[in-house]
Each structure stands twice: as C-alpha cells, then as structure tokens.
Length: 273
Ligand code: HPA
Image (cartoon, rainbow, N blue to C red; front, side, top):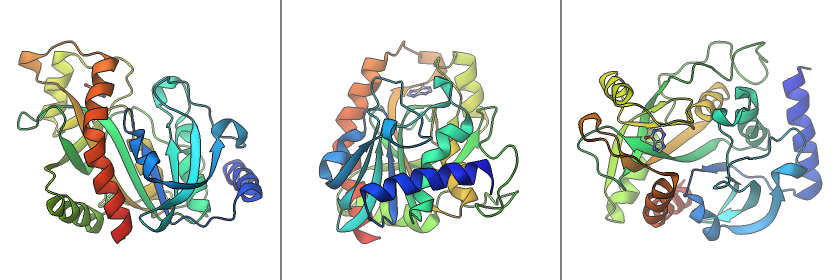
C-alpha cells in the first residue's frame, strides 16, 4: 500500500466512526462563497483539525469544517474552507480532501472560487462557468509515485469540466434568470495579485479569469475519474490598461454579493443531478 493510500484510509476510517453517510456529491466553496452551507441540512460537522492527515486552513476568510448532510435531497459532503498552495501546503495536502471524498463514494465535485476577470466583456460580480483551465502553478499534485489504484499515471484532460454538468448549470441559470459567463480559468500560485504585464500575458494565452485555487483539486478529480462542475465569481476587473488596486475586503464583498445567485444555481444543479 502507498503512503497516500494509507493516509486516505486513516481519514476515511476516522470519518466512519462519526458518520455512515454515503455522499455522492462533494462541494468545495471559495473565498466569500460559503453561504451555500446555510442551505445544507447538516447531519454532522467535523473540524478539519480532527481528521487524520487533513491540513488546517490558515486563511482567516476560510473556515475549516467538513459538513455531511443533504442538499436538494442528495447526500453531500462540503468543505467549508479550502487549502491554497500559497499557504505553504504541498499539492498533495491541498488535494487530500478530494482523495478522501472519492474514497467516501463521491463521484461529482462542485467547486467555486473568487477570481480576477481579464475578459473585457465580463463585469465585476459575474458568475463564470469554468469550461477549461490552464495550470500555471508551477507544480502538480500528481508529481511523484503514481498509485495506480487511485488513477492512471497520465490522466486524460480533454474534459476536466464535465460537459453534461456545464449544460445542466446553463439550463438551471436560464430557468432562474441568472446571467452566466463561460470561460477559461488560469491558476497562479499567488499570494500577490498580478502585475499589469502578467494580466496582459494571461489574457493573451487564452484565460478569461485568474485565481489561486481550484486547478489542483480538479487535476486530482480528473485523476480519479470524477465529474466536475466549476464556478468562478469575478471579484475584480483585471484590465491591464485601467488597473485599480484591489483589497481582500473588496474581493470578499463582491463574492458575498454574488454568492446568493451562485448558491441558488448550485442547489438546483445538485437537485437535478
Ligand atoms: N488574481 C488572482 N487571484 C484573484 C484575483 C486576481 O486578480 N482576484 C481574486 N482572486
């Protein structure tokens, strides 16, 4: 057995002493986007600090709790608070919860983030469905020994964001009269925001929004053949020729303002899965 598999088994064994839930859907909520948690009929809430091998969140805007419950009539497990590479965790630590989710039976992952928008047709507060991504983190959670029982050495990435789920989310948003954008998410390590030259570069290579999360989790989800639906909230306008300073407070305020719409879409998507 690989060390990673042993750690996953430890975490699952611990969680099984707390709950017999069999969630099929996993949810990871981004900065300022934790409101969905209020919609979950929670069965049990577990602090990350209790779970073997789980990293502990260091960012104040992220709570560290794993929530088991139901949403839209489905058994789900949600992370309130996620781990970022810039906090100093390894890629394996950042993605460990996705490994544990899969081991618990989760096959569909819903993931959200706050991101800077570079597509000039987008506006602050827009919700974007992630159709594809670019990994500029300079690292990868799959580097190192591959555990073939978890997934293949060279996972395919033709459809990391499941087309069927994107179509479902679009249908739900249309029914709810919520405007959705679609586009490419690029992940950078942060923690600093980008320079004008970097925004120009990132737009030039084909990205619509930029953020510091999500891609590691989605790579691991793809490795494990999980279905993924990803959302970005555009919290700031990253137009290099008209760039204004942005604070974490603003990012959180914009995310909070857009959050009810995102929650409404995610809840209905889960109900219709
Ligand atoms: N860059 C990177 N990450 C971000 C940004 C940004 O402009 N805004 C919110 N998250």
